[in-house]
Length: 342
Image 1 (cartoon, rainbow, N blue to C red):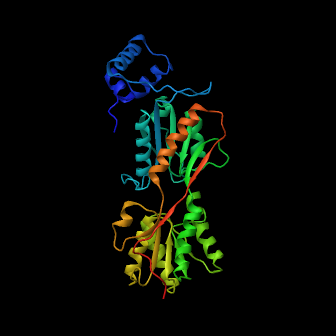
Image 2 (image 1 turned 180 degrees about the vertical axis):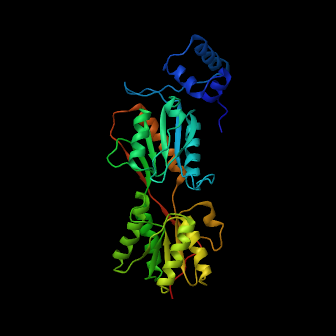
Image 3 (image 1 turned 90 degrees about the vertical axis):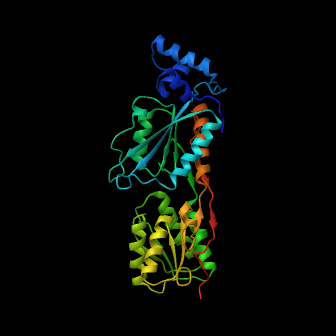
C-alpha cells in the first residue's frame, strides 16, 4: 500500500472537507482566501501530488470518487457479501491513482425508490459517482441527473441510458451451471430464487436455466418463484420438493438462496449431494465454508470494482464518448454439493 499523501490527508491538515480540498485544487467553487491558503499550504507541507492528466478539452477533473450503494431497511445492518468485494476493488484502484473515496448508502422504499439523496451529492463533495447494486431505472436517472457528473454503474441497469456500466454474464453463467448438472445425468432440475419480474441480473439467470434445458432437449422446467434471499430459497425448495419429489438437482439464483435450499433439503431428509445436487451463484465466502461446500458460479467482484474506477476515469477525461457496457465472464467452481445422477 502506498504511503503517499492523499487528498483526504490534505483536507484533514487544512481542517476542511475532502470535497472542499478537491474543489480548491480543481479551481471549482467560491472559497475565501483563508480556505484556499490553508489547502495550498497543506499541499506544500505534505508534498501531495495532485493528479494531472492530459485530457479532452471538456474533461472533468477527478480527485474524489463517491460510491453509492442501495440499502434495503430490512437488511440493515447486514453487510452485502457481494458488494463488499466490489468496494474493495474500487478502493484498491483508487489507491493506485491517488484518488479519494466517499461512501454513502441510499435507503430505498418497497419500490426501490431512494428516500433521499446523500449529502455528498447535494453538497457537490465528489467529482464522479460509482453506483453499486441493482437500482431501478428511475433511481439511476434521478441520481445521475442530480449529480451532473460522470456516473458508472456496477451491477445496475438503465437501458438506453448514457451511463457506463460493469455487469457479469449472468445468462451464460447460469447456462453453464445447469449444463453441468445435465452433463452429470440430471434431467429434473429445479430453479429457486427468482421472479419473472426480478432485477435484470436475476432474470438473466432464469433465462440461462431455461436455455440450458432447451439446448439439451429437456422441455420440462421446475420453477418455484421466490425472493432472492435465504428464507425465500428455503420456502421455495420445500414447496418444490414436496410438489415434485423426483427432482434430483436445483439451481439457486445466488448463494444465499442456495443455503436456504440446503436447509430445506435437510429438513425433508434429502442428503446433499447424494439425494439432491445443488449449485449457487456469486461464490461468496460462505460458499466454501459450509458443509458440504457449495458448487457455485464465480463472479470476479473485485475486478468489477477495479473496472468501475477505470471507466470513471476514462469517462471524466472523455465525457463525449459513447456509453460502454463491460460484461465479465464467469467460472463454475465445482465443490462438494453436486454429484452424478443415478
